[in-house]
Length: 120
Image (cartoon, rainbow, N blue to C red; front, side, top):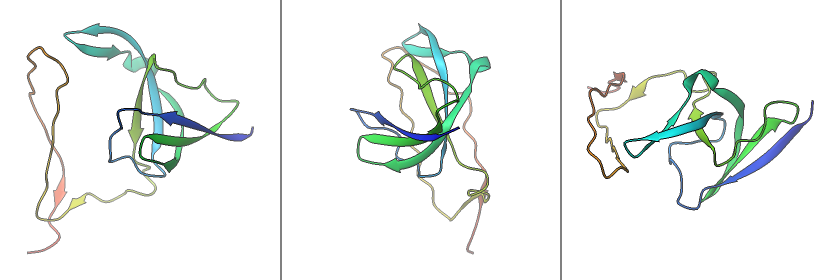
């Protein structure tokens, strides 16, 4: 078992909520429906941990005897490390942005979060 660093380049950028220490998972993209990529949720694979972040790249620390390196045929997901991020959102203001990259109509049925007010 040897730890390696792999760099993923994102020419169009990536989600700015990704932090060093976040966990990286991926699933294969299995098709396209309504302009959206579809993936198989029963094949979620843990890859590694975010090691460094640049303006258009992310370095991931991974075990070289683990799963294969994700390719452009995979959808990558990032999860906050539960050992580091154990509290809920705090504050009295929150800004949320939602994007739809499809040219077809889509419906959003629900958005939710947990918020703990930290001042009164």
